[in-house]
Length: 185
Image 1 (cartoon, rainbow, N blue to C red):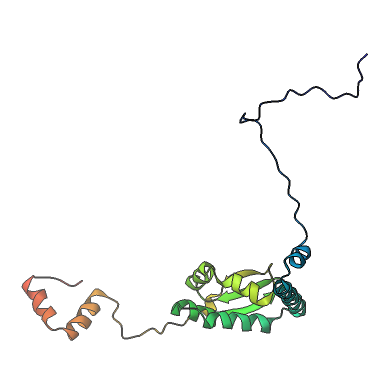
Image 2 (cartoon, rainbow, N blue to C red):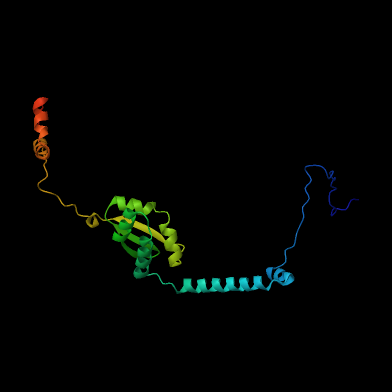
């Protein structure tokens, strides 16, 4: 009677067959054993220094408290380093505050909103500087914050007024109108 616990018989394949793959296992000793074995004290010191730097950065992150003032300072610092003059102006004119884990930005125009949204370096820079990887941003447009355009009451509005305004600058327009028999309506 055959034993039920026996394993099925496996046929071996030839070693040159492409279906047979050899696997090798390698054991990697811990880093401190490698450092001691190689006798590299300098590497051990740099590893210690790296660990100390990491601990200091962690402590800085824990000490950072997000508030409106810190957000504004980081925002203005980023804005001062921007190359584009229009983006720089939009960033400086924006009203920035903190809403939970999001930065609330209020701008005056859709153009400002679009340029700030398209700046791909803004949020990563703020997240890194404020040690908050989950920081988000919401941009609102408030037309009351839009720049006020001064309207000149002396600007012509009708075609006749526009022609007279241009003819005052260049009197040859009257001659052109007469020569080609043009009417201004």
